[in-house]
Length: 251
Image (cartoon, rainbow, N blue to C red; front, side, top):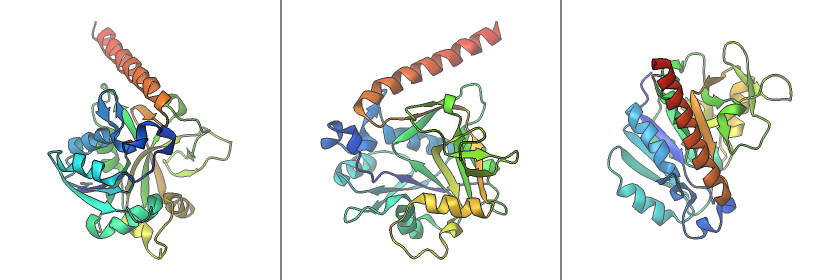
């Protein structure tokens, strides 16, 4: 289904990225010569999303100035400088700007490299897959071997239909890879201003309406200054392997 609105969650403090984030908001930290948030904005542009809301808190003027100078889609700011609202509360506050149709949500500090051989971007596949009749939330998921920088055991397991449940040390775990399509009705009945998206994930899972879309490519999370080099090396290695593989297939 067409997705016309999106939100990028960019209000975090980035404390683990110090000292870089002493003077720079984490979404503007560069990896491979590009600010982290730029990867998400480029993915949304390829999908044709023309209205993007970005929430801000820490060093907000720097991020707002950078966003205002960027051409392309309309970018609106959801101001959380007075109080951080967590991932769910941030989206809930921005709903008047996002509308009542299903929308995309991206993390500003994680990103992925598309598989050149896949033929279609991951967000396009997700948009086609999302079914508002049977789903409240569709998460992009990655296998552990598709990730760099992830340190946990995994977040969910998937049944044959793609329905997700919390990983409990049985089955094959997958990672929530920082991209979501959700229907705003998942917030119906919530009155708290500050809450985590995990609350919505669990609610949708309990109703059998939380699904996963396996990504094609490689997912990266960059949590510390030392992780920047590891991410750049992983990007080069992945793209090099895909280019080599494509060349061999064409011989």
